[in-house]
Amino acid sequence: MIFMDSLMKYSFFNALMLLSIILIGGCNAEHTEEAEVTPIAKVQTQPLALTEIADTITAYGSVIALPNNSKNLSVPYASKIAQVYVSSGQSVQIGDPLVTVEPSEDALLSVKQAQQELAAATQEQKLLQGRFQLKLATEHEIVTSQLRVDQAKALVQDLTARGALQRHTLKAEKAGVIAVVNVQQDQRITAGSSLLQLTEQTHWRIDLGVEPSIVSALKAHQVVELNSVNRQLEHSVNAVVESIGQQIDPVSHLVTVIIKPVSEASFLLNETVQGRITLATKMTLVAPRAAVLPEGDKYTVFTVLDKKAVKHTVQLGIETDTSVELIDPTLKPQDELVILGNYELTGGMTVEVEKP
Image 1: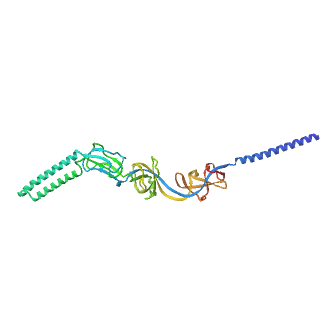
Image 2 (image 1 turned 90 degrees about the vertical axis):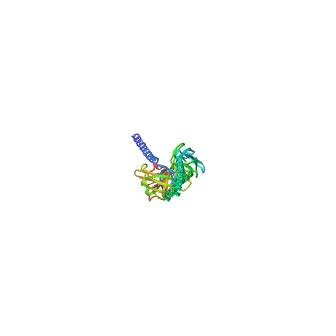
Image 3 (image 1 turned 30 degrees about the vertical axis):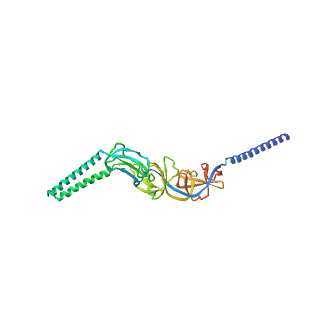
């Protein structure tokens, strides 16, 4: 009996010890599991900056010549185009030949008719003078005859002076670009018809099309940064708003804003350009776009304080392609703003800041 009692006590003791070990092990495992699931996010930060940001709009348009720097070439008599030396878009220098014209059949006929009229008027005047001496013509008839002679002589002199009887080559009086060529070889043209248009190469203007809703925000002399759409320029062209249209184009449904370069423009005639118009500038808290997260109809950013993520619901102000203005009274300059790893964060999460 004593042996059996001892055996039972020993078994109960071992069972109790085993149960204690299991309970202690379970507690330790629970603590270990809790330690392992505690999240630590790795992020990159940068100090929140108080800096200047510009409110801009982007518009597109084309390069056109200033009207007062374009010249239409013409001849004041009916002509035939003997030869054309240039084409649209071609650069020319002072003295370069542009087009050769020669009198057309109509011009030669006009000169012949003017010469015949002068001869007839002169002959009539001689006859009237003889009759006047015989008192068969009045002084009024003599005056009228002299007027006819003077008019016929003036017409012949004018046609001759304008080159109606000569072959003539028109040359460039200024360096520039041929904007338009309106004629071709062997073509007959009437007096005063435009042969071609020459414009000075450095005197451009830019017509940008903007949305009607933006017009009220535009003012004369606002700063514009111009770039070509189809090619890379060495540097942007500085310009200003010269005038703002007051009607909507029926085709594009945009309002034309005329831009004038203030520095030398290396654009091509009719080239498509992009203009960034600065509406206003502001000194404010500015963050990279990557730092801002959409959340429904709101936006959030995270900062780091004492190795914990702090969530801020913000409003967005002025935006650019790379930066955005943050509006929130809880933010201040030099706050550690999370710019990478913020998609994994929640408020209060432990974070580890890594160097970029």
